[in-house]
Length: 173
Image 1 (cartoon, rainbow, N blue to C red):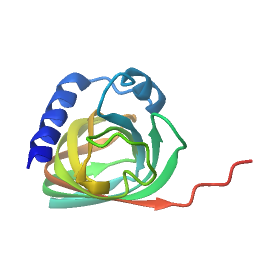
Image 2 (image 1 turned 60 degrees about the horizontal axis):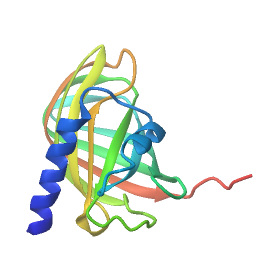
Image 3 (image 1 turned 45 degrees about the vertical axis):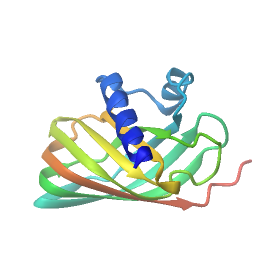
């Protein structure tokens, strides 16, 4: 229970501090380097899709960039349950990743995440999401804005679920 309350507090503070500016994973890691609970950034290229009033689903390719260590590649399935009306084009999303356990380790963002989302797309896509889950149920993720131009037209509000599965990284030359 204590971890849940602390996790919710960290999420609320990070959402307030996020503002409306979104940086790259590298810039986010640099800005957050003094944080005691920030562990990295997750960049996802999300496929376009359509919402069908009460549910929507999107596929994504994601790269986790820890503050320290090697990048990891993931595939994601993102589902919304609630109000989800309209159509969006492919876009890029950068998540800040927080953990109460800040020890460096692999696969920290693998697993199921649940939370909520609110987003409006009218040419540009903007909104906010928070998720809780992952390794040891300690990882928090959030975003305040989305990258991408002419993203479509949609309205989303409700429960948000994302499943991240690690895929083999390309060999280094």
